[in-house]
Image (tube, protein in one colour):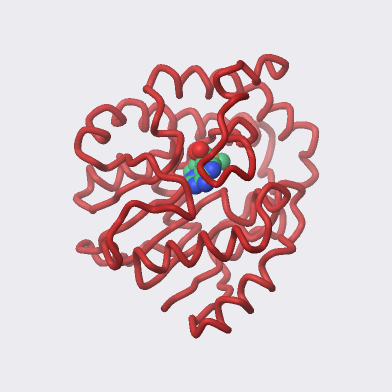
Length: 243
Ligand SMILES: C[S@@+](CC[C@H](N)C(=O)[O-])C[C@H]1O[C@@H](n2cnc3c(N)ncnc32)[C@H](O)[C@@H]1O
Protein backbone atom coordinates (compact mmCIF):
# COMPACT_ATOMS: atom_id res chain seq x y z
CA UNK A 1 0.00 0.00 0.00
CA UNK A 2 2.70 2.48 0.97
CA UNK A 3 4.25 2.17 -2.48
CA UNK A 4 1.03 3.42 -4.02
CA UNK A 5 0.84 6.68 -2.10
CA UNK A 6 1.96 8.86 -4.96
CA UNK A 7 -0.79 8.74 -7.55
CA UNK A 8 -0.25 11.44 -10.09
CA UNK A 9 -3.06 13.70 -8.95
CA UNK A 10 -1.61 13.99 -5.46
CA UNK A 11 2.00 13.87 -6.54
CA UNK A 12 1.50 16.84 -8.82
CA UNK A 13 -0.32 18.97 -6.30
CA UNK A 14 1.60 21.83 -4.78
CA UNK A 15 0.06 23.65 -1.88
CA UNK A 16 -0.58 27.31 -2.36
CA UNK A 17 2.68 28.32 -0.69
CA UNK A 18 4.50 26.39 -3.40
CA UNK A 19 6.97 25.18 -0.79
CA UNK A 20 6.17 21.50 -0.97
CA UNK A 21 3.55 19.12 -2.19
CA UNK A 22 0.37 18.44 -0.32
CA UNK A 23 1.08 14.81 -1.18
CA UNK A 24 4.05 14.94 1.22
CA UNK A 25 1.66 15.22 4.17
CA UNK A 26 -0.35 12.28 5.40
CA UNK A 27 -3.99 13.28 5.84
CA UNK A 28 -4.66 11.90 9.32
CA UNK A 29 -7.57 13.10 11.44
CA UNK A 30 -8.02 13.67 15.14
CA UNK A 31 -11.09 13.89 17.34
CA UNK A 32 -12.69 16.61 19.44
CA UNK A 33 -11.42 14.88 22.60
CA UNK A 34 -7.86 14.98 21.24
CA UNK A 35 -8.11 18.64 20.18
CA UNK A 36 -9.55 19.48 23.60
CA UNK A 37 -6.47 17.95 25.22
CA UNK A 38 -3.95 19.44 22.73
CA UNK A 39 -5.28 22.95 23.17
CA UNK A 40 -6.76 23.01 26.68
CA UNK A 41 -10.28 23.62 25.39
CA UNK A 42 -12.25 22.02 28.23
CA UNK A 43 -13.54 25.35 29.54
CA UNK A 44 -14.10 26.95 26.16
CA UNK A 45 -16.72 29.73 25.98
CA UNK A 46 -19.57 28.20 23.91
CA UNK A 47 -19.83 31.46 21.98
CA UNK A 48 -16.20 31.27 20.76
CA UNK A 49 -15.72 31.39 17.01
CA UNK A 50 -12.98 28.88 16.21
CA UNK A 51 -10.74 28.56 13.18
CA UNK A 52 -9.10 25.16 12.66
CA UNK A 53 -6.14 25.71 10.32
CA UNK A 54 -4.89 22.59 8.51
CA UNK A 55 -8.07 20.90 9.74
CA UNK A 56 -7.65 17.96 7.35
CA UNK A 57 -9.87 14.95 8.01
CA UNK A 58 -10.23 15.71 11.74
CA UNK A 59 -13.67 15.25 13.30
CA UNK A 60 -13.20 18.34 15.48
CA UNK A 61 -15.41 20.52 13.28
CA UNK A 62 -18.19 17.92 12.97
CA UNK A 63 -18.25 17.10 16.67
CA UNK A 64 -18.04 20.71 17.82
CA UNK A 65 -20.78 21.76 15.40
CA UNK A 66 -23.01 19.02 16.80
CA UNK A 67 -22.31 20.39 20.28
CA UNK A 68 -23.38 23.90 19.22
CA UNK A 69 -19.95 25.51 18.74
CA UNK A 70 -18.92 27.58 15.74
CA UNK A 71 -15.93 26.13 13.86
CA UNK A 72 -14.52 26.80 10.40
CA UNK A 73 -11.78 24.49 9.14
CA UNK A 74 -9.29 25.65 6.52
CA UNK A 75 -7.15 23.30 4.45
CA UNK A 76 -6.06 22.98 0.81
CA UNK A 77 -7.31 19.40 1.05
CA UNK A 78 -10.88 20.66 0.87
CA UNK A 79 -10.60 21.31 -2.82
CA UNK A 80 -11.17 17.57 -3.16
CA UNK A 81 -14.35 15.53 -2.95
CA UNK A 82 -15.13 13.25 -0.01
CA UNK A 83 -14.45 10.28 -2.29
CA UNK A 84 -11.00 11.57 -3.25
CA UNK A 85 -10.08 12.34 0.37
CA UNK A 86 -11.30 8.93 1.52
CA UNK A 87 -9.21 7.33 -1.24
CA UNK A 88 -6.16 9.30 -0.18
CA UNK A 89 -6.62 8.27 3.46
CA UNK A 90 -6.94 4.64 2.32
CA UNK A 91 -3.75 4.92 0.28
CA UNK A 92 -1.71 6.30 3.15
CA UNK A 93 -3.09 4.10 5.96
CA UNK A 94 -0.44 1.40 5.61
CA UNK A 95 2.33 4.00 5.44
CA UNK A 96 1.16 5.55 8.67
CA UNK A 97 0.90 2.22 10.45
CA UNK A 98 4.34 1.14 9.25
CA UNK A 99 5.81 4.45 10.47
CA UNK A 100 4.27 4.03 13.91
CA UNK A 101 5.40 0.42 14.28
CA UNK A 102 8.95 1.12 13.09
CA UNK A 103 9.29 4.05 15.50
CA UNK A 104 7.30 2.74 18.46
CA UNK A 105 10.09 3.73 20.84
CA UNK A 106 9.23 7.36 20.11
CA UNK A 107 5.63 7.08 21.31
CA UNK A 108 3.85 6.75 24.61
CA UNK A 109 2.08 3.42 24.15
CA UNK A 110 -0.06 2.24 27.00
CA UNK A 111 -0.17 -1.54 26.91
CA UNK A 112 -0.63 -4.09 24.14
CA UNK A 113 -2.73 -2.96 21.20
CA UNK A 114 -1.92 0.72 21.78
CA UNK A 115 -0.94 1.31 18.15
CA UNK A 116 -4.08 -0.47 16.94
CA UNK A 117 -6.21 1.68 19.26
CA UNK A 118 -4.43 4.83 18.10
CA UNK A 119 -5.09 3.96 14.45
CA UNK A 120 -8.70 3.13 15.30
CA UNK A 121 -9.12 6.65 16.70
CA UNK A 122 -7.75 8.06 13.43
CA UNK A 123 -10.33 5.94 11.54
CA UNK A 124 -13.15 7.11 13.81
CA UNK A 125 -12.18 10.74 13.28
CA UNK A 126 -11.91 10.36 9.50
CA UNK A 127 -15.25 8.58 9.19
CA UNK A 128 -16.96 11.27 11.25
CA UNK A 129 -15.31 13.97 9.12
CA UNK A 130 -16.34 12.29 5.87
CA UNK A 131 -19.94 11.93 7.05
CA UNK A 132 -20.04 15.68 7.76
CA UNK A 133 -17.94 16.94 4.86
CA UNK A 134 -20.57 17.53 2.18
CA UNK A 135 -22.97 19.39 4.47
CA UNK A 136 -20.10 21.19 6.17
CA UNK A 137 -18.67 22.37 2.87
CA UNK A 138 -22.10 23.64 1.81
CA UNK A 139 -22.41 25.49 5.11
CA UNK A 140 -18.97 27.08 4.65
CA UNK A 141 -17.45 25.15 7.57
CA UNK A 142 -14.75 23.53 5.39
CA UNK A 143 -12.88 26.15 3.38
CA UNK A 144 -10.17 25.63 0.79
CA UNK A 145 -7.25 27.64 2.14
CA UNK A 146 -3.53 27.20 2.56
CA UNK A 147 -1.57 29.01 5.24
CA UNK A 148 -0.41 31.74 5.16
CA UNK A 149 -3.19 32.80 2.77
CA UNK A 150 -6.42 32.77 4.72
CA UNK A 151 -9.58 34.09 3.04
CA UNK A 152 -11.07 35.58 6.19
CA UNK A 153 -11.58 39.18 7.28
CA UNK A 154 -9.36 40.29 10.15
CA UNK A 155 -10.86 39.37 13.50
CA UNK A 156 -13.37 36.87 12.08
CA UNK A 157 -12.57 34.41 14.86
CA UNK A 158 -11.83 34.36 18.58
CA UNK A 159 -9.28 31.55 18.52
CA UNK A 160 -7.23 29.96 15.73
CA UNK A 161 -5.86 26.42 16.14
CA UNK A 162 -3.34 24.39 14.21
CA UNK A 163 -2.89 20.71 15.01
CA UNK A 164 -0.22 18.49 13.47
CA UNK A 165 0.98 20.75 10.67
CA UNK A 166 3.14 23.69 11.85
CA UNK A 167 6.28 22.57 13.74
CA UNK A 168 5.48 18.90 13.01
CA UNK A 169 6.49 19.38 9.37
CA UNK A 170 9.61 21.32 10.31
CA UNK A 171 11.61 19.77 7.51
CA UNK A 172 9.07 20.97 4.93
CA UNK A 173 8.42 24.51 6.16
CA UNK A 174 11.15 26.97 7.07
CA UNK A 175 11.09 29.44 9.96
CA UNK A 176 9.79 32.27 7.76
CA UNK A 177 6.87 30.10 6.60
CA UNK A 178 6.00 29.34 10.22
CA UNK A 179 6.10 33.03 11.13
CA UNK A 180 3.94 33.98 8.14
CA UNK A 181 1.42 31.23 8.95
CA UNK A 182 1.10 32.24 12.58
CA UNK A 183 0.87 35.93 11.66
CA UNK A 184 -2.04 35.02 9.36
CA UNK A 185 -3.72 33.10 12.18
CA UNK A 186 -3.25 36.15 14.44
CA UNK A 187 -4.84 38.35 11.82
CA UNK A 188 -7.91 36.10 11.76
CA UNK A 189 -8.10 35.74 15.56
CA UNK A 190 -6.60 37.49 18.62
CA UNK A 191 -5.09 34.22 19.83
CA UNK A 192 -3.55 31.19 18.13
CA UNK A 193 -2.54 27.82 19.54
CA UNK A 194 -0.27 25.29 17.86
CA UNK A 195 0.33 21.65 18.79
CA UNK A 196 2.63 19.71 18.80
CA UNK A 197 6.01 21.46 19.09
CA UNK A 198 7.93 18.34 18.02
CA UNK A 199 8.88 17.44 14.47
CA UNK A 200 8.20 14.18 12.65
CA UNK A 201 11.31 12.64 14.22
CA UNK A 202 9.98 13.40 17.69
CA UNK A 203 12.62 16.10 18.22
CA UNK A 204 11.81 19.60 19.47
CA UNK A 205 11.16 21.67 16.35
CA UNK A 206 14.12 23.87 15.48
CA UNK A 207 11.66 26.60 14.51
CA UNK A 208 9.99 27.09 17.89
CA UNK A 209 12.55 29.43 19.47
CA UNK A 210 13.13 31.67 16.43
CA UNK A 211 9.41 31.80 15.66
CA UNK A 212 8.63 32.76 19.24
CA UNK A 213 11.36 35.40 19.24
CA UNK A 214 10.14 36.87 15.95
CA UNK A 215 6.55 37.04 17.17
CA UNK A 216 7.60 38.69 20.42
CA UNK A 217 9.72 41.17 18.45
CA UNK A 218 6.51 42.12 16.58
CA UNK A 219 4.86 42.85 19.93
CA UNK A 220 2.90 39.61 20.27
CA UNK A 221 2.70 37.62 23.48
CA UNK A 222 3.87 34.00 23.37
CA UNK A 223 3.98 31.16 25.88
CA UNK A 224 4.74 27.47 25.76
CA UNK A 225 2.20 25.68 27.93
CA UNK A 226 2.09 22.10 29.10
CA UNK A 227 -1.03 20.22 28.00
CA UNK A 228 -2.72 17.08 29.21
CA UNK A 229 -1.73 14.92 26.22
CA UNK A 230 1.36 13.01 25.15
CA UNK A 231 1.64 10.57 22.26
CA UNK A 232 4.98 11.55 20.76
CA UNK A 233 7.32 11.19 23.74
CA UNK A 234 7.92 14.66 25.18
CA UNK A 235 5.14 16.09 23.00
CA UNK A 236 3.06 17.56 25.81
CA UNK A 237 3.21 21.29 25.07
CA UNK A 238 1.50 23.81 22.85
CA UNK A 239 2.56 27.27 21.73
CA UNK A 240 0.02 29.94 22.63
CA UNK A 241 0.44 33.32 20.95
CA UNK A 242 -1.69 36.42 21.18
CA UNK A 243 -1.84 39.88 19.65
C1 LIG B 1 -1.51 15.61 9.55
S1 LIG B 1 -2.90 16.50 8.90
C2 LIG B 1 -3.57 17.18 10.40
C3 LIG B 1 -5.07 17.30 10.32
C4 LIG B 1 -5.74 17.82 11.60
N1 LIG B 1 -5.31 19.15 11.95
C5 LIG B 1 -5.52 16.90 12.75
O1 LIG B 1 -4.65 17.16 13.60
O2 LIG B 1 -6.19 15.86 12.81
C6 LIG B 1 -2.03 17.91 8.19
C7 LIG B 1 -2.94 18.76 7.29
O3 LIG B 1 -2.19 19.91 6.85
C8 LIG B 1 -2.77 20.29 5.62
N2 LIG B 1 -1.94 21.30 4.93
C9 LIG B 1 -0.91 21.15 4.08
N3 LIG B 1 -0.43 22.35 3.66
C10 LIG B 1 -1.20 23.27 4.29
C11 LIG B 1 -1.22 24.71 4.28
N4 LIG B 1 -0.34 25.43 3.57
N5 LIG B 1 -2.15 25.34 5.03
C12 LIG B 1 -3.03 24.64 5.78
N6 LIG B 1 -3.06 23.29 5.82
C13 LIG B 1 -2.15 22.62 5.09
C14 LIG B 1 -2.88 18.96 4.89
O4 LIG B 1 -3.76 19.04 3.79
C15 LIG B 1 -3.39 18.05 6.02
O5 LIG B 1 -4.79 17.95 6.00
